[in-house]
Image 1 (cartoon, one colour):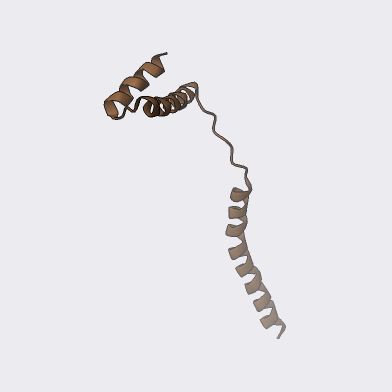
Image 2 (cartoon, helix red, strand yellow):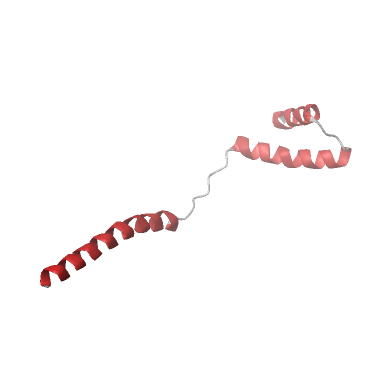
Length: 78
């Protein structure tokens, strides 16, 4: 009887360890705060130029790849 109880307890402990370990590892990865990536100066300039292009497009009613490329090229040089 004691052997059977010991076997059941051991089996339960092993099953708990098998199930709990991956869940604990997953909880640790989820608990880490998401670090915000630093934006490079070039990326910031592209972001600013994209916003300016949106305004330009609305004001002058221009569109198309060529108009976009011309505008962005000039914006990035300045």
